[in-house]
Length: 137
Image 1: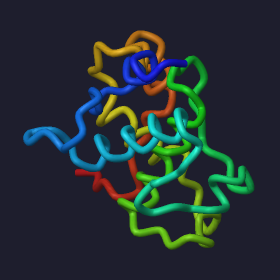
Image 2: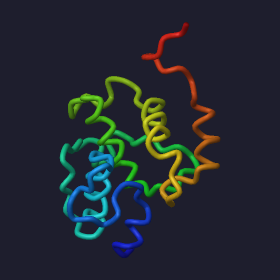
Image 3: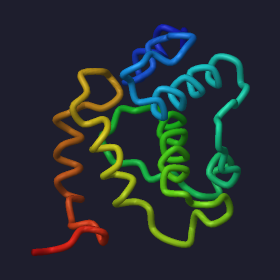
Image 4: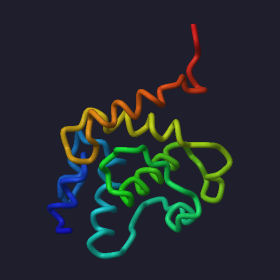
C-alpha cells in the first residue's frame, strides 16, 4: 500500500510530520508509527509489547471491523500502555471487553475507513456489559 492509502485507514494521523494541536496525541503517534512501520519495516512504537508483536499474546479483534490487523495490534499496545500493563503481564487479565470499549470510545464516530460505523456499532452493542469499574446505582 502507498502512504496515502495507509493514512486513509487512520483516524487521527493525516500525514503530518509534527503533532497537530487539538488532536489525540496518543492515537496520532501510534497511528503514525503504524504507517511508518508498514512503509519501512522499522517499529518506532513508543512502548512495545514484544509478546503482542510476536503474536504470543493475541490482539482481540471484533468481527466486521475493517481496521487492518497490524493497526489493531498497535492500538492494542497503546491500550495496554494507557492501562499501565507491564510487558510480560498482558495475560494476567482478560482485556477483550475493555479493549472493545476503548475502540468504541475513540473510533466509533469516525467517518474514516478505519471502522465501519454500522457494523462496529452492532458488534459493540453485543459486548456492552457494565464495566467492572462502573458502579450500579
